[in-house]
Length: 222
Figure 1 (cartoon, helix red, strand yellow):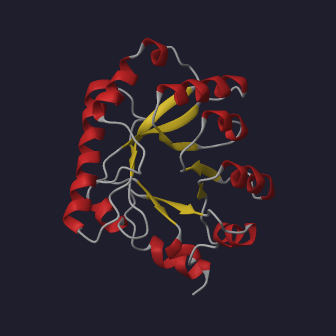
Figure 2 (tube, helix red, strand yellow):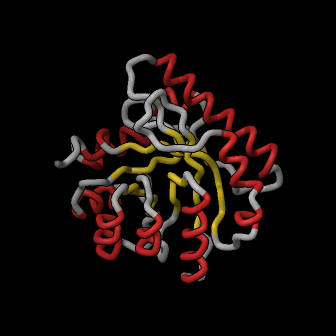
């Protein structure tokens, strides 16, 4: 099946409340353009150098989501155009995003990444750490960064009950943050969870953004 066929088939499975981030990492511009021409507008990259190389070559109405672990010294390269940064896990990173947002005269939307998996290799905050950031006067002084939701990655396992429980935990974090810190903020509404292998479970637990590559573009290019 073509990328267009894959996208069409995939979109039929999604409720209106869920947006698809087509994960285009390792994929050439031609593949992204094929998906774009099939109607896809949100694409996800996990390496700054790849994103910076691709962005000028593709249509300007693409919403680029940065979905990888982001180093503070790389923020400046994507700050002029990135639509959403998924994996914010420190006040230090938020400070740099705010600084670069200010330089580019724009407010940069971000998600707080939580560690929900039973795996040490995955990044993310605990609920307590997130609360410390949101209560911090330094964070509260930022004018050019906006937290619009949460993100998390479940354990890579065939145990669906475990994965479902981890997604449920992230949803609980979202609800708690919403009621405690973002009660009046209608923009705080995104829950980024679910990938090619577990997106159905994620949607069942309230995901609003799923990050899917393989099911659209085929196997990853090495």
